[in-house]
Image (cartoon, rainbow, N blue to C red; front, side, top):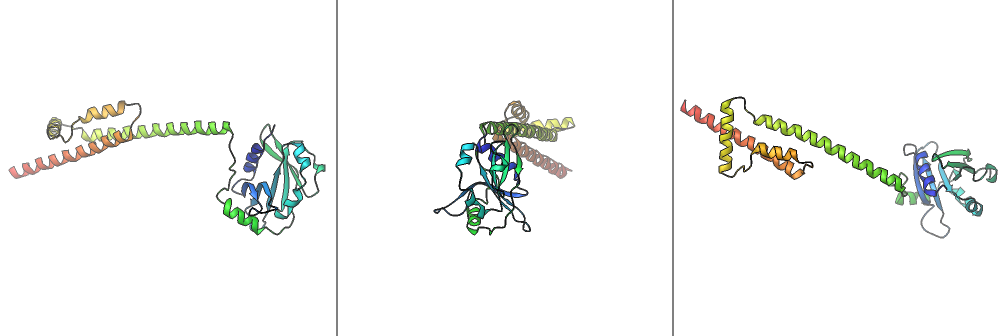
Amino acid sequence: MATSSEIKEALARRYSQDRYFFTTECKTGPTTEGLLIFDGLAISKSWAHPNIIGLEIKVSRSDFLRDSKYSLYLPYCHEFYYIVPQGMIERSELANDIGLIYFNEKNQTLRIAKQAVHRRVDISSSMLMYIIMSKLDQDRYSSSLSRKQLIEMYVQGEKDSRDLGNRFQSKLIVEINDLKKQLSWSTDRGYKEYHEIEEVFKKHEEYPFHMAERIDELLSQPDLDAKQIQWAVDNLERGLGLIKKEFEKAENKKELKE
């Protein structure tokens, strides 16, 4: 059996945001005696041809037969439609100016069975004020999603998070490898000086762990921790800076001797 929520979701798709402002449970003004509530309301985004479409949902024939207030909605909209499960009521059961939209429960789509007559009405300032105050941040259908849809959204979110994590890890590995290359030396003298400087760091407790061992430990972990990553990168940069300073000192001494 079709539900009101399913029909509202289908209406939201039909009255898309690029052409319409669409909302559900829209009041005709502030809460007072005689207040009406549209099941759905669509307003075309057009200055030249304004069109407010009132939508009344009925999911059972008995509910439709009990409805005697539809005429009260007409002053608030240019077009008025009943939306019902396909075949529940016939076109001939409606007044000439009232439209009919069928909901196909199987494929969750809508079809106009009877076009509503477009009537000239004075747009209600009370209803517009209610929309401005309560609905402008809801330019989309906001009723509860089905459990199935929520699960699908959750699963997709988990997949997106894993993809993002994998891309981040791959990029991180590339950047760390680049830093490792910067620390490599092309001559025996370079390797020797590198290890001598490392011993100095350890002696003064400036750099207590071997860089190569720390990188290997980091890359071997299944889940990279952001703080550990930042720690490693910071220390790599710091190590490069200290190495550069040592080389500058060595060059200065060399120049003085010469």
